Image (cartoon, rainbow, N blue to C red):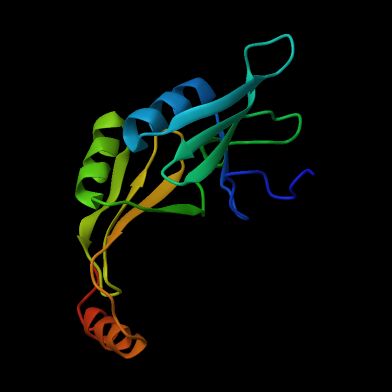
Length: 156
């Protein structure tokens, strides 16, 4: 019997559109240790209309831009309001690996009031990623107090 949710998939799966899917696949392999599961080219071309990668325990779907669909990347819009959150075992190491692979730092890795060691970056294809390692369990009350302390500080 066919399953409604394919084997190995979660109910939510990011599906990114990029201008250069071949380069994106290679970037995600170098930066995040992705493995490629499949690649489907547009018939009669070498344009990638769909690829599926595995990063950690999650799938990532990827497609090239197809303006006729319309399907555009963040670079075509001048940015993206979406951030993909990525929990890892060692945020400092993975963050540096992503920078070495060509990502740009948005926010350096630092201890955050909610109990994560956290930083943000932008990949070469315009997608924003937040990377984190959870380092401290907090009760809702402790998190509220920590947030209040954090926001007493001047911003900037």
